[in-house]
Length: 208
Image 1 (cartoon, rainbow, N blue to C red):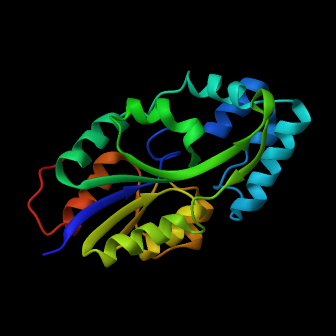
Image 2: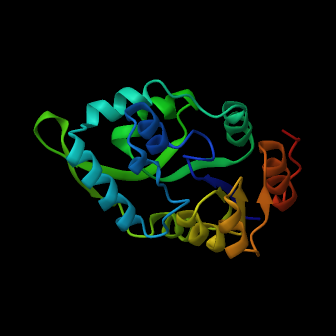
């Protein structure tokens, strides 16, 4: 019997979208775009880097916004439930430079994400992927180790991961993402997502 891993995206699933928070704090509407809007991650990040450079925003400015953020309502309880019943790993296209406080609030699950390249004064001038298509690659690697993988995400950059997983669920996705990937089931709250995971499990797991 395969052991089971739960792999979740971070922003939009467990915590608010960081870049939307930055946009609201700074008044820069150009930073509201996320992977829910643009499927090409490099295109999205190049856009963000240009906006940061144009307005002189630094890593410290973004970290100050993130410090005021908290997990989504119910996310901490859901993360605790996952940790009790699965191996729980967060697969995200965020950056270690952003995520420390939010991961602490979630009880420090394992996080696989990327790095920013910064210079003097905290200027962000590039980003460095840990691995191309890292979410899908991580799921495939876990499967190669004889884990069954149950995954959830909300955006275009999650769909390859969800398609690779033994169970992939869209969590509160935009209507256009759900319409483009009709084979992926949709959960609109944590209780529904937990039920998908419970149904797919080979073990008797209590409800959330």
